[in-house]
Image (cartoon, rainbow, N blue to C red; front, top):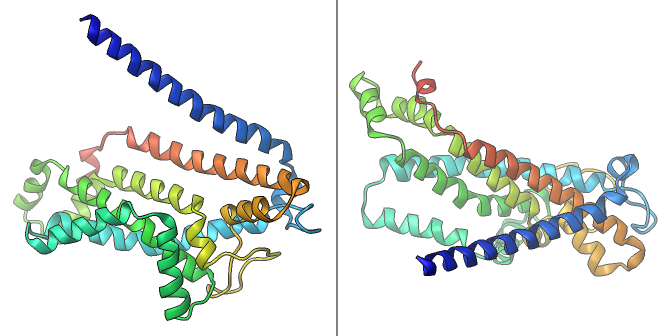
Length: 280
């Protein structure tokens, strides 16, 4: 009994210690960054060698990259998860597909960036552009969405699935009118987690779609884009102390944005699915 209490105490202290360190990092970054917040900081473009102005192009560019990446990754991830859960058998091919998707989740982001640079920028001729960066980031979000959709559909109680078939519903009707509505909370949560990863990545978009400085938005998907993570990287790597206020402000805003997305995902993840909504 004493040994169990000691282990429990040690684990609790470790948990509190990790939480304190993480919270301190968040508080330090946000506290230092909010000092730079102002109306002009969010509504103007950088000017005077990044020593004045704001981060509006970086904010809008990040949102454009996020939107286009989700537009590509969500349908593919949804259909992949549906196939793996409902149509795929337990053969070797399905196991290989599942293994490949799992492996994609653990690949370093810089490897994604090099792959996207070779395939989209050079081989397909998209150059450094919004399209190339979004395609690369969509590959990173695809495994998260596909795996979650698969697990969400598998977790649906068999009674719901069998009841729908007993009423004469076809396979596609069961999937899209019963199973997906039942599991939509988990699917939306996974999509939001993918959003948090997309909007915070630096290496992939740095190699495939980012531009050092921009005063307006790209005119087409083949134009480069300015994003918050790459903006922070350029400021800290190429400038001195006179522009660190902008880097701190950008970091604080990006962190607040990511925490906001994850908080929504956390709240949705705590909700239980309502089977009554699946039956119309």
